[in-house]
Amino acid sequence: MEFAGFRLRNNLFVAPMAGVTDRPFRQLCKKLGAGLAVSEMVTSNSLLYGSAKTLRRANHSGEVAPISVQIAGADPAMMADAARYNVERGAQIIDINMGCPAKKVCNVYAGSALMQDESLATRILEAVVRAVPDTPVTLKMRTGWNRDHRNAPQLARAAAEAGIRALAIHGRTRADQYTGDAEYETIAAVKAAVRIPVIANGDITTPQKARAVLAASGADGIMIGRAAQGRPWIFREIEHFLATGQELPPPRVGEIHRVCREHLEDLYEFYGRDTGLKVARKHISWYTKGLTGSAAFRFAMVQLTSVEEQIGAVDRFFDRMAENHDTIQYAPQALELAA
Image 1 (cartoon, rainbow, N blue to C red):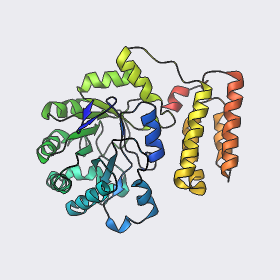
Image 2 (spheres, rainbow, N blue to C red; image 1 turned 180 degrees about the horizontal axis):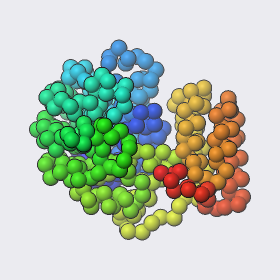
Image 3 (cartoon, rainbow, N blue to C red; image 1 turned 120 degrees about the horizontal axis):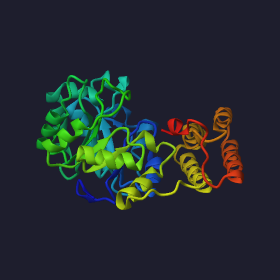
């Protein structure tokens, strides 16, 4: 797929998720089939550029290109500075956050709150595009502020006129948060309104759903967030299904074990052992959620205080599972648990 001047492996994108899409996770998803992975959002507040969190989020050492970095803020000049700052540190695509519904973001009129003020949103888009004229700028947004104000098509037209190269749209309004079902009619309306690539996001959890969303929305690609947590191989499953119409067999226990272990090692190296231990807990929980015997395992996991204990527990869990089953065995209600 051609996207913002880059030739991608496919039209499958990893959604930016705060506290999740760090460099280890992005690299893993790309390895397992994603065409592009967008970083977790980086603040536009220059006072925080020296913080450990911001420095980690701006660390792209060894990352597979193209490197897409999302920035968040509500001031055009600060957002322009943030774009330049991240390009200087290796960003090859700048993505603007107008999709995050979190209160701590929206309370400062950033994220999806910007969709309430199309004039300010447009000024931000124009300022960022001008600030990095040689770097493509993309936009992530929602369908609108609330269900009575689904203004994504209008804002999409303004974005295209401002020089935005592509759009990703979550099929919910800011007021919806993550409740209810995503809708794709508004995404289809956006696709009809602009000539730039449009990426559909929201509730895409299976290869079949991916194909259905592409058909319903007319979008050029799909973006996956929560469904990839603990299941990064979803990208290769979707890639194969869209290309052949056939489902891949589920990953074997041994492969899940290996992927999880490699992911943990990357986390320990990236964050350091102490912080990495804590960050790893949520990923281990996602990898094992819905698997037989995992509830007790996850409860015990949070009590462990060393990397060695954590790795040992993971090894024992998957080794026990592999003794009885070659493929994963989910407990009752597993489909709901794993979604």
